[in-house]
Image (cartoon, rainbow, N blue to C red):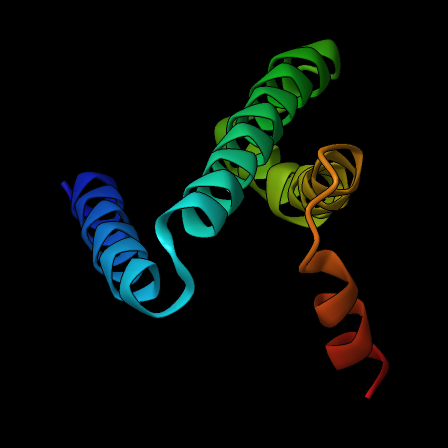
Length: 103
């Protein structure tokens, strides 16, 4: 229920953003950026699932402790993986993100 609503909202927001940016920046650039973001997102999700399937059963954690380990350990690793994947895909706007973080 709630997870499905979050996914639907994210898809709708992404589509709205895509069309708004397409008017301002141009189709080719936005489509290329969106493809890189989508690819990095899919790879990040694969990292999340793989780590959860490997880590939680390995230690025999109960569901609540498994969720805690996911929040504290797996999610930060997945975020780092996402940034690495964007770098490997030559995502140009990553340098802008670095500047924002340094401020």
